[in-house]
Length: 139
Image 1 (cartoon, one colour):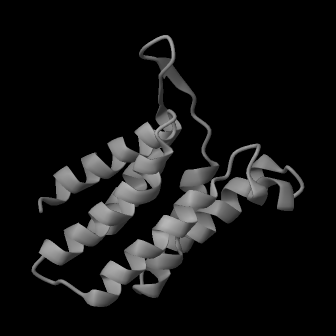
Image 2 (tube, rainbow, N blue to C red):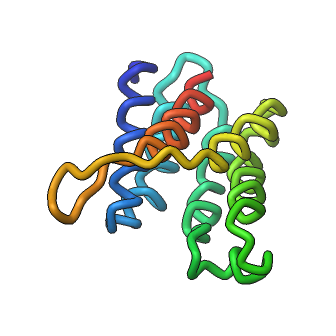
């Protein structure tokens, strides 16, 4: 599977997940990451397993109504940093320690966006977050 296409599709899946299609973000991103690994020349069973761990992490959520946010005292900034750390777990398992820095920063960014339909937004922060996630998958 093509690296650039994989990054683009993971980014789109992440952005759609923020617009009410949570199942896309929760299940298709980890599945695509595992599929990318399975079709690569350097396939690795540990990688496929590690990426599937993302199903549980991406299902947690980090919004104002999430359990994680309530656990952290409704501190949005702290919640986003902790969530970024949690998302980095599969990458740390694979030896990509730099994910511990990159993903909390990516999830901390608030960049806004613009309306594309009356009910859907194009969020720059989701573009950055899930684009970063996609790049980590293909590295």
